Length: 121
Image 1 (cartoon, rainbow, N blue to C red):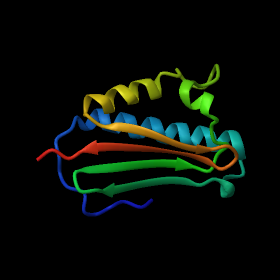
Image 2 (tube, rainbow, N blue to C red):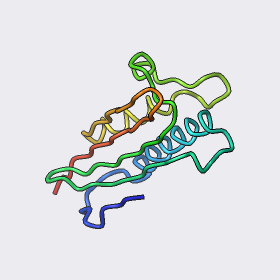
Image 3 (cartoon, rainbow, N blue to C red):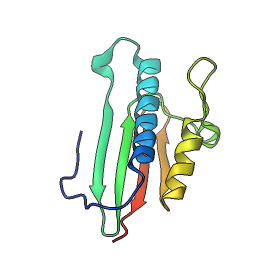
């Protein structure tokens, strides 16, 4: 975990942002379990926050299998692995906060979700 201690206070719907972060962490944990099974020492989960000039970033990453471009566009889970609506809902919540979610992923290396939220004074 790498949390920036200088994050400013800003107005948001904290319950909704918590929902997004929890969803992204759960997705990362699912990816790690899929790749490493019970070999937890091989699994790496990244949780990071950053303060930029006019926004903050929340970065959730893993060293799972990664996603190809097609999967990134469709981002749904397989049957029995949740509703598959988590990322869709997360995108909507972040859009409602005038923010953005970016995906950085490389097959065999892992995935990072970068949530950027504007800081409005």
